[in-house]
Image (cartoon, rainbow, N blue to C red; front, side, top):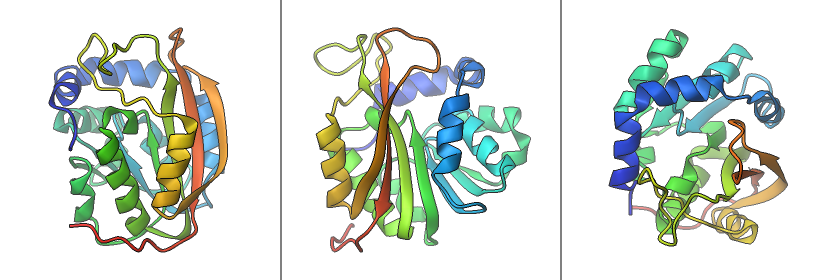
Length: 214
């Protein structure tokens, strides 16, 4: 299963307002954590680049960053806010769209994106990441571990999908894709929303994937 249609429609229709919201978030601690995950100058892929906030931050710190997002409108809004990212951002639908990249990366990061996918799509994203990333490369991802605004079917009032997984589930997904979680921590929401708590994990590629993807 690919990205949920209602989820994607929300980001397409609200790209301008979401960009403004994301750029106003207090992410100093998150960006400091992200900066500590990768070697200086590493070649990085961001999955779900949104407003371009974190891609622009990492590029300003000397990293070679490529960003992807499923909503063309978010990419367009990101480039207006961060024109320095021109040529670096691409519209890619998950999970299959990652196959467009034939080169490899030193690291991958994904903030507030993977939870919008189905469990099967999350599994495939990690497997594709395992094929894209260099040996001993790192994958940093941040996903909610608690939300109080999601119904029993896994959707919020805006129609966005949220796949609820335990820490153990994320660890297993990593291991099945050749990664091992080396650090994890819980943080509060950068936008100050009550009832939303984030899980931040850093995994390292230790094994060459043995599976084959179409």
